[in-house]
Length: 226
Image 1 (spheres, rainbow, N blue to C red):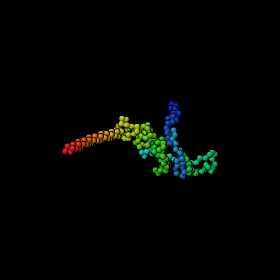
Image 2 (tube, rainbow, N blue to C red; image 1 turned 135 degrees about the horizontal axis):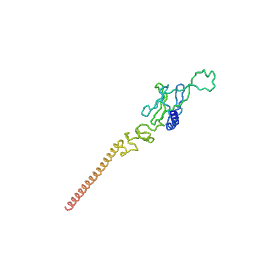
Image 3 (spheres, rainbow, N blue to C red; image 1 turned 120 degrees about the vertical axis):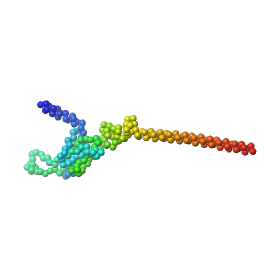
């Protein structure tokens, strides 16, 4: 009895558990072995469990070309008939050549693409970047955040991002600020040295000019006396 009550409570809580889970709803058209994307949405629903048995493989790839999720699946080509069935319809074993099916796959913030394969041959590749919030390029961009993309927005990614500075993240920004400070100091010293040199040259020139004027005046007075 207790097991039955526990199972009932568990079943009642399952919708709440999966309510916040995000999944890709990928609607695919099948036509004689060829696949094409019909629509793709991001919805709040539990994804289908991964399977190891099936003719085809759905594989989600990250920006680092790593496999985030992989599951085998089959395409149902059995025709649907209304009831009652005729004798001819009941005996027919003909399969469909065209159909549309939906894959519910788990959402990943760093997903780059969805691949549909058969025996490792790529049949269809779907771009997932418009749903992603972490492109794993080690730069904290405007659409990324620490919560959604810690690999890009965490101090220690070796990039001094716009939201970081020497005080907040010395491991990323120390060298940049040190070089900047050194270059500024060097420039100040250079400007100061140039100013001092100009003052000295001006002083020397003024003294020489005064000496020339005095020399000319002295020679003029001598010649006047004669």
